[in-house]
Length: 268
Image 1 (tube, one colour):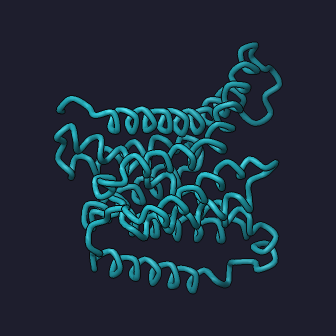
Image 2: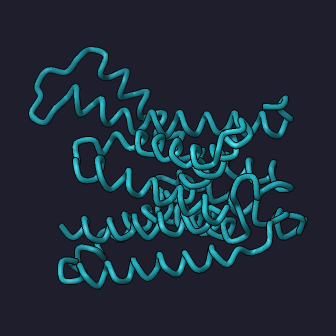
């Protein structure tokens, strides 16, 4: 890899901060479940320090992810295609930020919302964000995603409790928000970093899928989710980016997948 520019150095630094925070957060749940299985009565002395650190990192993820991602978008405004970002990806980011402002507890969504608004104003004022031409594959595969989602809801509609779903709608909205940041992190920023290391894009697809899977260790004790659903979803999302060179379709599929899972599991 060639010597890094200042823009690249800052982008990669933010990437590693985000990845460490996300992996640590989910790994912490896994470790705590191992150390404190259901019914445990003996609590190790180090447990409280570990819990405090995990709480701080989770708090950082809640407050800091969107602002840091917005910084990356601004820094790379002249080369957004290297992040697999097109214009609609920006709209999804704004949408996610607005949902987060509404749903975040204790005002923790406010910094994220401010960051999104500032970036939107900046984009409209400067009018110099550079995007590749629209890819028809993005829209075609996005439509397929909505079709699969609709068919899935139709199949399981008899198992969804409308009252329970309404009472837990916040969980569904958060499920919509999270994929935006995850796609920018894994299949945007990380994809760009590995591509600049001259990795083959097929290899990048598999590596990002593996890392995405491992960052969901909190689901380890749910065999279907950890050993089947997450690996399969990871590969599908990576393939969508490989096919379209855009995270728009992978984000839409990711959002619909999380929303479907939220609606189904909330009702049980």
